[in-house]
Length: 330
Ligand code: UDP
Image (tube, rainbow, N blue to C red; front, top):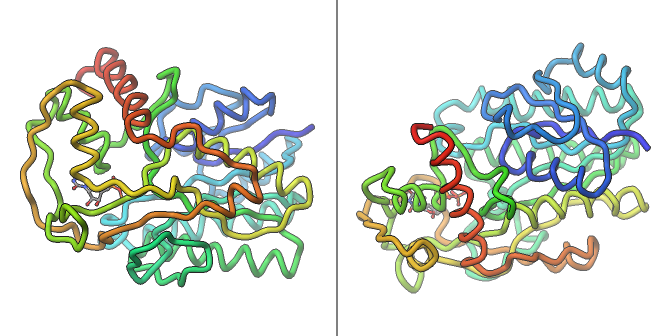
């Protein structure tokens, strides 16, 4: 058995996946340039610091090891930043993935699990999004993901690439053993920000818009536990290795929670006050994104273990408390 190359394995979802791959007895090598990843998150399997767009490095890596399959997380992932710096996003996300696909082709590695996003869907929709919903990405970030899905689909037809593009809804929570969790700098995501307010590290949370066409006026998202996401990558690998069909697969819980519902649940889980202030809508935000994961259940046998938002928040809270004790000024 060869190794699984995990690009971006020092990042939030990548590190959780590397941990679960090792727990399942699979050997991993993490490739991460540490631009947004953390060295202390890459603690399972081998680690190489480097860029996924570095062809010479990829050649050395694929020549010196037996790589059986690739899970590709390495990418920039801030929607707002992608609007301000589109070229950097196309270079990093499209350029990096093309370099990786080239190296895989040169070294005859044909199995790839790719991090995609529910941000590829559009226009806004009130129901559950299925994989055949139209894709009209509105941000450069989401366009990079959609473009790569098209490239992989064409390569699957032309050269037999076997791929799964996993379209994540909102990754949330932390490793139930609290060894790794969500650490971004700057932090822009709702749940870590809410918990930083609960910890007294921020004065209040700004709610970006309460005039959406939703029951309480705040935007609705489908929060999915990061370990459930991690496990889906392992199931996607097995699916491809067993001859399963290539394509895009949603990973969501099928349940929407509004910003206000997340804050209320966080108050319950933490037992702390979470002061809020209303703020304007954030450009590019959709009113509602909730996924239908019927295909993931049917094709991968995927079954989320942490479907309840309170359980998701409890794992995130345990990690954030531990992280604050370890590095109060991080
Ligand atoms: N949000 C908010 N205040 C914040 C951060 C996020 O109201 O300080 C809202 C955001 O507008 C969205 C939801 O929380 O409706 C989830 O945002 P996040 O950035 O976590 O994930 P996204 O859905 O943008 O990928």
